[in-house]
Length: 173
Image 1 (cartoon, rainbow, N blue to C red):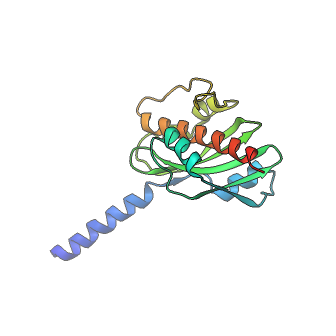
Image 2: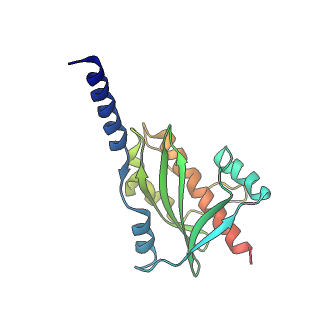
Image 3: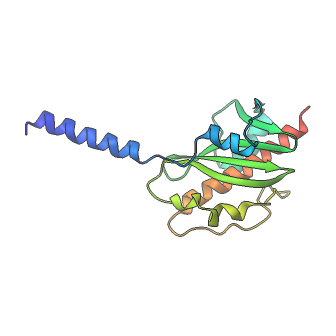
């Protein structure tokens, strides 16, 4: 096989393996419909101020590269679709907060090659009822998963971030 065709074949195989690495467990829109009983409320925006950015930096360990965050609210329930890097790729997660406590976390799209176990209920159910303490940490311990340390860390950060964002939306008129 000529060298050029061989290179194209290898490049095509690599591109297919990269695209296959993203596992879509649930589309974000379907998550919202499920969360709000079939009718998602209109999206709202939380504008990030410099004060909030400083807190976000503490939670994530880096700056949030967005000026605003989209969320959905019906009564005391808010839903957040957030992303954080595990090891190298973003993990898209849906988080539902009710009355300042996590009601549900679901990994929607997972793009890493390892650590996908964070999507299972044995892990995500640990967050149910968790809230933020005065130091912006979760008020309970979350057990890790061997071989998924960075993914576990990412989900824990997103849980804290959703709880913090929920507090901010309730504090603003």
